[in-house]
Image (cartoon, rainbow, N blue to C red):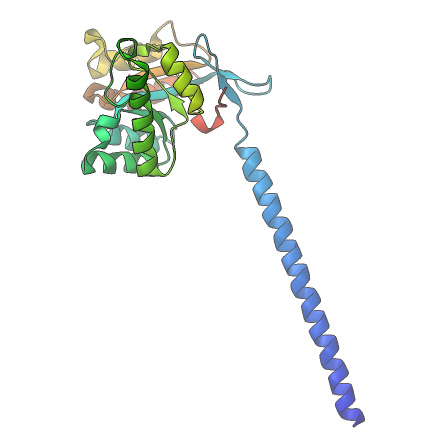
Length: 255
């Protein structure tokens, strides 16, 4: 009888110890999970903001590197945006692709956008049909913005955070709708690939890096174009040679 009693007591102590070990393991795991979540939140804390007047990308505090540039590409995904995205990925560079909803109505367009998104790039709203917004009614403007938001969210699962008006023309209507949609206005500080004299690889590479407009917080406008696709690799290398950090849109706060 005493023998069985001893065995029972030993078993109870063993179970108790195992239970304590499991509780300790669970407790440590919870602590580790909380630490990981904290680290993730800290990594995502925005370090920059968009100047509402100049549209420069400016640091939020004095400890943040001011010598940055942002790469953006409009009119995607028409023909060359996926190629551009793969080149950016090879250089480990982030960017915003501003899309027109009219390119997302076909399966091919949807697949192109999904590929760009899956490569890790920010998707912005550039309206549905690329109109002059100052020629539209409130309802027409609302359709242009909200329809593109809906298409992007349907394809990627994420609604655009940034809005860029075609030709840089914003209106009271677009301002109200963009605010209601919780998005950030985004124009640019300079761009050249839509001008005839820069619609070739060599000229575009040179002007994008050597223009006098290049300065801290530069917001670079480019497009889904063949010459831009061909020039983007050397544009990246040229900016880095001048010690510009190419900012990740995830580090830009929404005003």
